[in-house]
Amino acid sequence: MSDRVRVGMIGCGSIAMGKHLPSLAKLEQVELCAFSDMAPERAGQAAEKFGAPGARVYDDYRELLADPSIDVVHICTPNDSHAEVSVAALEAGKHVMCEKPMAKTAADARRMAETARRTGRKLTIGYNNRFRPDSQFMKRMCERGELGDIYFAKAHALRRRGAPTWGVFLDKEKQGGGPLIDIGSHALDLTLWLMNNYEPRVVLGTAYRKLMPGNGTASAGGSWEADPHAVEDSAFGMIVMKNGATLMLESSWAINLLDPLEARYTLCGTEGGADVKDTLRLNGEMHGRLFANAIQFDGKGADFAQGRKESMQDKEIRLWIEAVLNDTEPVVTPEQACVVSEIIEAVYESNLTGKAIYFD
Image (cartoon, rainbow, N blue to C red; front, side):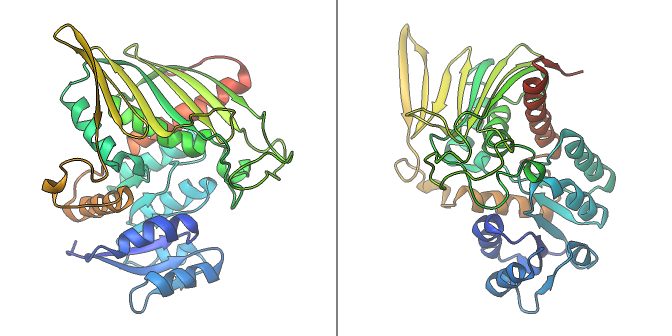
């Protein structure tokens, strides 16, 4: 591959316009050369704002994939089309970044991972919270074993009132679920990555529809008007890993809670613990005394030495493009993202059956 990457965008809605395209446009080695969307006017607007001279616009993503000059495709479509479009792109010889969650179903996620292995193309999923400064700091601590054996953790994805009432977020057929598959997948991915533990043994889950929809519920996005049987407003899971570690997963778009936490984690290890809300807090015992330390980010610490100030989205996209150029493994691997989808599906299945779901 040359020192430049030609990128095509499939799906030109808010996540593409607000995250992927602005970050890609900052990279000198990237040429945004093709855009596709079911609404042609959206693709045209994206091309006009971010496209390279001569950028092409397509109604059908398959026409974009037929262009042999495109190296990388970013997929920002509803969840139910992630697998279809990703598999087609990989088969067409493209490297793929697909927005989270990996797929609507675990079977589709596994199909995506298998296709990437078979074609030798790179595949990554847009779990951008790994690229926050606190996440990167915490990952280095975990890799050095500073928390010891992490045997209990929580993945937090709770909003007091914050259902996304726009787009297709409330459409179960297109999305596969509500807050669990939406914001819960972010928190679960982040926590599993910090634990470096991707071997679940058993999952027990519950889901609720208590504060939605269509009843005038106060929400940042307005009242819910979806079918009352569409998606859950809250879902919770207990995951026991094969090594005995326990992970509690909590997700909600609407819950009567004064201290919501979104894309946050709590880690408890044999040598220390950590959690993050407004800042990263470390705790443990030292010389017979308990301690708690707050680690400062966002300009409050001595970060000047790193010489680069990036948003988590910019860092995510830059490292992905560098992985393509340098032929290295992406930060978020398809195998890791596949486990996230498998656990989420197990929580939903456990809720429906009332039984614990065991993994082979």
